[in-house]
Image 1 (cartoon, one colour):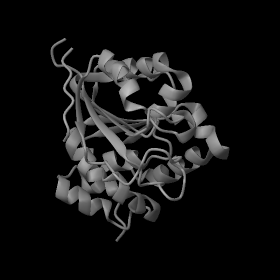
Image 2 (tube, one colour):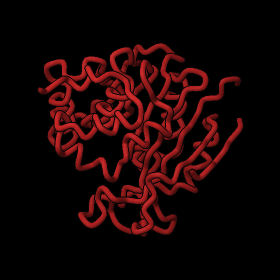
Image 3 (tube, rainbow, N blue to C red):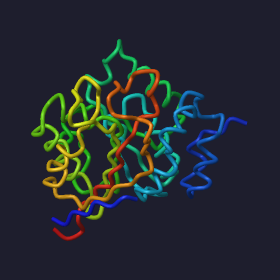
Image 4 (cartoon, one colour):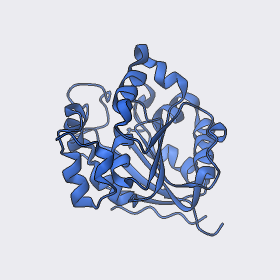
Length: 247
């Protein structure tokens, strides 16, 4: 396995098609998107993230642990009418906080607004019915820390193996998470000790690149990510994990 860590009129949105970076930025600014989503863009830089991951028109992609579907909609725009987006959620994620994620995702997809999106309410990635080796890309945003901290390295490794099996050779997993300080209680802060988790990522058999796109030096990694002072502005890791073309 080769590992590389490098710094680096209301119209349904679907009808805009798969579009290049500049046009995607403009589409994301459209008032057809929810104001709450547009407010989150400054911290998440979705067009830039999509460009870094190489997600584009006609691709088949998955939003892993999609929650309310922020990235589901971003990727729906990016892959366009010829593409396909799977919005995957374990049932427990949809039930969390009195079903807040279920309500948000259902509202986002109501009335066929994003017809290239299909929901996958299944925790076991091997039981989704999606053919192995069929995804061009996947993304999981601000979720991996919960797997690693809450269920342990073995569960995190199992998740990565499940995603890897669904990706085509050369397919990409984008992983975004909050940086954690090794000296802190990252489970309670909802952060990821990146150095501790790196062996799990390396052992999963991906080629690994990183980007500084979502870094924020003003975050000292000691504050809970839901704190109003830092929420939406945390220092974040962005990894591009590529399944090798030749095993």
